[in-house]
Amino acid sequence: MQFTSDLINIIREKFSNPLPGRAAQYRMAHVGRDYPVPDFSKARKAAVVILLYPDTTGETQLVLIQRMFHPKDRHSGQISLPGGKLEAADPSPKAAALRELEEELGVPTNAVTILGQLSDLHISVSNFLVYPFLGVVDKRPDFIPQPSEVHAILETPLKVFLEKSMRRKKDLKLANGITLKNVPYFDVQGHTVWGATAMIINEFSELLMGEILSTEN
Figure 1 (tube, helix red, strand yellow):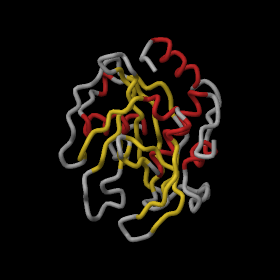
Figure 2 (figure 1 turned 180 degrees about the vertical axis):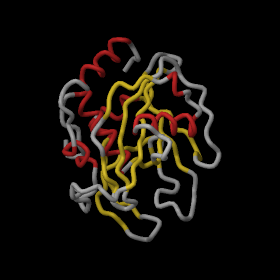
Figure 3 (figure 1 turned 135 degrees about the vertical axis):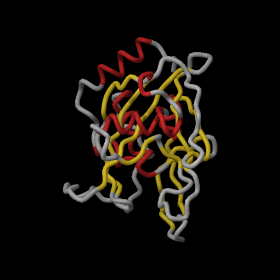
Figure 4 (figure 1 turned 90 degrees about the horizontal axis):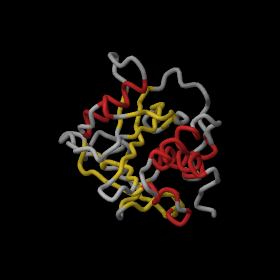
């Protein structure tokens, strides 16, 4: 999928329509995950960015990060979207998402155009309410990973997340020894992209494609 002005306009127009919402998110959730109770008064707030940009051939890329390994971090070592918790100085979730993107990957805030906001998502294991945004930059950024937070950068063609064949399931053993059965995931360069990250990306994928994309198709 080429990164063109037509694609940007299509994405911008898609955000003027109703979002696919939690139904799309939960098509990439494991069966043990329930829809959260809509009371987030005690949840911590976070924001993430799905960042799109062209590679040297003009192919649209989406950047993911592998988080550093921290023994006290429930999401240690996992593949995620760039982002993090809202700070007191952040005027809005969007501002927090852009700040985190710059801190974690060195992408200047003023270089990013935010085209829309996706449905928020509650992560029960860490009690975060996450606000996802879709951003674009007109050329590949010179990524500068934050050493304390980013173990690796995964640059992946957007088309990978739009193909039904790339939605798979497997049993997943967690660090605490628990095994989750039949977990939906994206296989990205041999990495398992699952959980909240897969759920957020799937909503954007369904918004862009205008159809249901799941592991059942």
